[in-house]
Length: 194
Length: 98
Image: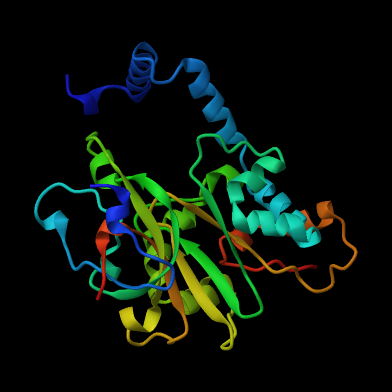
């Protein structure tokens, strides 16, 4: 029988059985990983960003080792690739892309959105990032700000630490986390209020 | 060969090899086309990871150093702003001193 003709659910069950029989991964481990992946969402990354905005020591730890900083907030990172965090500053804006496939910081942002996987985004993010950001996202990077496009090509995953918007003095971590969106942590947008 | 055979230090000027293994047969390459043969600068050593070119085919994969390499965008695409940059993860065995 051709493998392509096999119903996918039967194929999946067979692979899972083989993984268990060969002692590579138990059914419970696979279920746990599926549950962790399903639970991950941009809200987790947003909590990390908000904490970094109010706590300079946490910000330093986040920039040093993103995965450790995530685990500090109870976000499970076991078995995930290392997480690097790139900070936007008054001089530099960062944009994350994976031109080769769709590498994405799933542990802290969840499943990649459809546009992140599109050929159009992947090509234009490296070739014409300022044009793409302005036309597709209404994100205009001023001429005096340097743009760094981070092509996530190998074993690391990358997340952007955006700048805290003006007008948020005195806000709680919860209030701050609520304004941080998925795109802000990839660099296609920046956090705004109101 | 050990990981130290492909060692570079932050600040080193490097060139990505102008090599095209995918023309010689089945290959799994994590080095984007647009940086092949291009000069850049080592930002930092990210760690050592099993060579994906072997890992993808289920072969024994020895650890290789992975670097964050910064490229000036204008070097790759002439019409681009000189100050903009591309930051790409490149394995040490793809890098050479120019």
